[in-house]
Length: 264
Image (cartoon, rainbow, N blue to C red; front, side, top):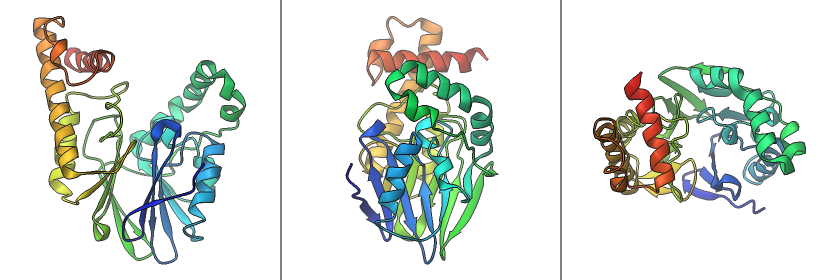
């Protein structure tokens, strides 16, 4: 696999991977660096570490953008580093990590050996709303703006480089994933991020790096999903689903999750 990085700001890099079309971020300061997400297995993390070492030999701090396996199954290979995440991220990994791995092995028997190698390591430094990390003399601000793609999405803001790592709150290359989402809250969470962080470069959790206009357009799609799901809850699904901005399977998943919220 290519070890190439895209520099999207001063000493701020993105590496896009064929596996899950996933992005990993790297922020390099003076004598220290920050790694955003660790990929979906120890083998993938080892590949990532080799790639990081083509950029810097500095020690690292790790941030998990949220508690989905493709963003944290590589944590163990960054042993000794501080691993930051939202408090609910750590809780969900502690509670569900082993079961998640078992389900993945069942669904992907060809990857059994690779997945059995994974040690489940949750973040050991947590916060609930905001945290600021000094990465070799430059600040990286972590924010949780609310429910969205998950219960624990973290945004990493690198103001001196004009870059925002949005995690899976923003997606490119495929529709947003609603499997464990909060569709009624997601648009407001993205709006809060865009209102507070005016930076021109936005790195999604998956797919190509985007700009504010793309993120604003996706916000509008998410807002439409929330509005249509509320209508479907009252009027029924048949006449509404054709108006959703995403394919039917994605729309049905979003509707299911929105109905859980509405019925709660």
